[in-house]
Structures are given as C-alpha cells and as structure tokens.
Length: 253
Image (cartoon, rainbow, N blue to C red; front, top):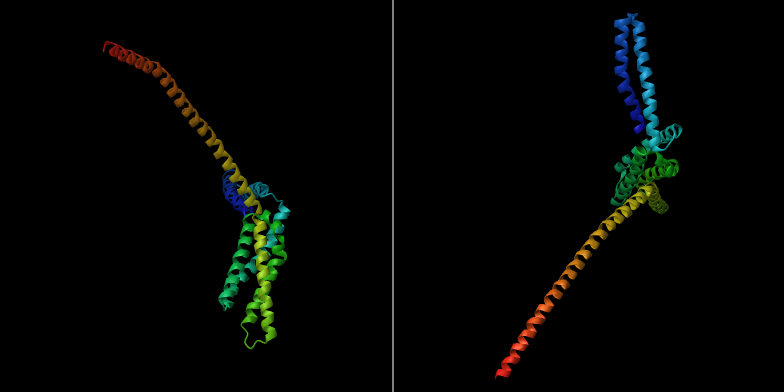
C-alpha cells in the first residue's frame, strides 16, 4: 500500500541527515564516541518522523480515509491473506473438470477483490461483508466439499449432501460476483461520465464543420446564380439580333 511507502521515504531522507549530523559532531565538537552516536541517532529520528508523518498523511488524504481506518483495514487484510492462499491450495484436491472450473472462478473473484482493496483501501467499506463472512464461508465449504468428494463408498445420502454443497458453492460464487460488481460500481459510473463528456465534445466539433460546409455551399450557389444573371441578358440580346437578321433575310427574299 502507498502508506507503507512513507516509511521508505522517511528512511531515505533521514539516513543522509544522520550521517551529516554525525560528521559535524565528530569533527567540530569532538564529543565522546557514545555522544556522537546519540547525536547521529537523534538526527535520524528527528528527520525520519516528520517526513514519514507528512508523507503518510498525504497518502491518507488521497485515499480518503483516516489513520485509524487504515490500521483497521490493514488488520483485516492480514487476516484475509492466508485465506486467499488457502484457496490456491484447493487446486491440488480437484478431481473433475467442473470442480476445477468452480475453484478457478472462485480464486479469480477472491483474488481480484483482495487486490483491488489492497490498491485502494477505501473500497474496503463497499465489500466489508466479503472479509467478514463471504470469504470464510467459501473457503470452509470448498475445502470440505473437495475433501469429501474424494472419499470412496459414498451412500446416496452422502451424494445428495455433496450435490447440495455444489449448489451452495454456486450461490457463493454469485455472491462474490455481486461483491466485485459493488466494488467497481463507482469506476463504471465514472467511465460512463467520461464517455458522455467525450461524445459531447465530438458533437460540438462537428457542428461548426457542418455550418462551414453549408455556408460554402450557399456561397457557391449564390455566385452561380449571379453569374447566370449576368450571362442571361447577353444571350437574350444575341437571340434578338439573330431573330432580326432572319426577318431581314425573309423580306429580301
């Protein structure tokens, strides 16, 4: 998580400051060795904590949670991590293609939810039921189902119980899908808004282009009509002159 990086930043800047402080203490003040060591430690701690607290609070503001909420989420993530690893172990117990598909889908859903909350701790509160109950129920039931399904000499009651367990796993899988959908609901809404904004910008760009093309067409049409009106009297005069010449020829004949 980003908050853990604040400790790294604090150490990176505190080490040079501690070395500089120790160098000044040993060469200019000439204290005893143990006093110089205390000065170096004081320089390190005096630089580390302000930098770590400042960067840590900055990350918490970006994530939109408090330090208390972050510690609580981190404790829940530590409890959920071995359960996620336990789901991976279930691949070894699979004995059929259908069971492999179920185990694979459940693993993908659980790991995706866990990684999403790990990258953005604020999303924890949208899927807190996943960490409190859904993950535990899925891991326990899947473990028992895969273990009992390998047992030989099953009675009809045992087979019916395994069938009911398989149906329950399907329901739990749909529950995990609903958790993932709730986790990404805001992201989809934000993407929808971005699409609407982009489509509006495209329409605004297309409107001036259409108007300019219409203006060009209208200008061309008016120019052609003016040229036609200028040519029309000349053609009319030529037609009248041609008519009078023909009439004269008829009279002479």
